[in-house]
Length: 407
Image (cartoon, rainbow, N blue to C red; front, top):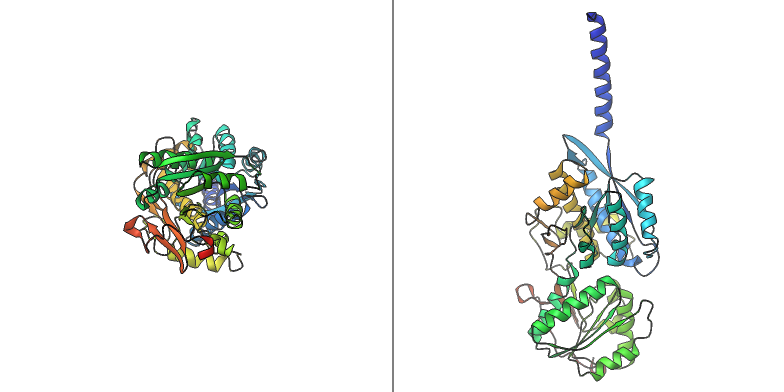
């Protein structure tokens, strides 16, 4: 059957119009990313600090026109919901992001407790989940196919810098208390294991329940153990309370190690934060030569420009989330797709090939991050100093620290 030339030309013209319309639409297409951010509750400070880091990445990507997939630039659109620091709420809000907000990719919430709940939901819907703060090893033992930690090192490795610093200082006895939740429990177990490998005797290893406010009995028990070092593993709010109560009790340890002790909000408690050891990925003298994303100084400037009214300056949560965005961008570019399986394969293919502001990126097949190691800080009289490892140290550790009445 012959078709008239005019008809063929008409069909071709219509097809061209349709193609042009599709191209125009595609040129303006968004990649929609969803995440929950704690607006209230114990995770609010850290979650919002991370959100600001992620927004710096989005602002940078969109200022460059978006991420190229198949010759088309795709800008980033962010959808956020409040999880209220409540793990029981997390599955529902992530389901809302997936079903109602139609997101393409998910970023995890803050912390292992919430992220474990999020991962179960995103996996059940076959969505790609990028972790930026959760370190619990158990998350990676569930057989999830589409979960990747872009920047946060696993809890089993997270305590290594602190334990190594204790060994270098000559600590002989270590007392530990920890919150009975995945992140602090996993970190504590890692510290204990590494300390024992170094010949440090762990003379106390005791858990406490969520909601504990009075730590005096545990602090006094740690003192009675004769420990050279005290390591309370928990979230920032608990550690700030413990620091205050230690001073009230005149509980003097030669070394006290608090993971969050160098965070700007923690330093805000003043004298109670003095001489504490801590760890971070965010310090002016910790500078990785990045090949993905912006460098530290540029991220700091973007933070100050985008968030002039932020209560606190950028911290390591900001850096972790920004770095996760930078890694995600490379994953999408490598995959040239938003398909979860292709994204996961691209994430594996890029392992050992990227360095962001928080360090080298390397993951195992299950998505567990095994690089991004922290440095150890001490809040000394003249300010924070990097005291371990020696290769990046900016000052000498003060050990043993002076008693409270000598400070």
